[in-house]
Length: 198
Image (cartoon, rainbow, N blue to C red; front, top):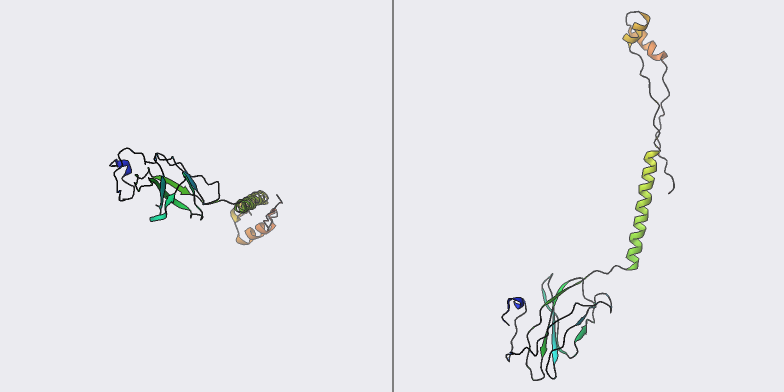
């Protein structure tokens, strides 16, 4: 095929020109991971012709590895990977080969991804961390709400204010005495946090 849609397919030698597309695999289905994590199962449409076998090629495209899996003796229209594949992005092609050696074109490339598996243990750890984080947030909220606000503090009168009250010139010693005798509210010296249990 000279179609531009197939320009990404790997080059190969075709010993017999296939003009009727009997050996062409029309569709490759998205993989199923029902067998297990990292073990995709692929299915595709059957090609016409007697004694047809299939060639399967998988490349890894996120780190550029070619022929990660390459098989040419498949007789069924399904294949399950037997060794778990690493997390990453991949591309798959299928072609049909007749019993007489006629090689069909590669199918349209199928891109697929092997995603990381989230186990129940990982979910439990995330849940525990979320609970701890929530407890911390609640404790911090209650702690801030429990800070005792000191009573208003009355500022001692200055020397000039004291003198004005008694109609006397300001005197440093009298101002100090006035300051000593001026009453102030007690100021708490300890600010404490009250962490309540959530």
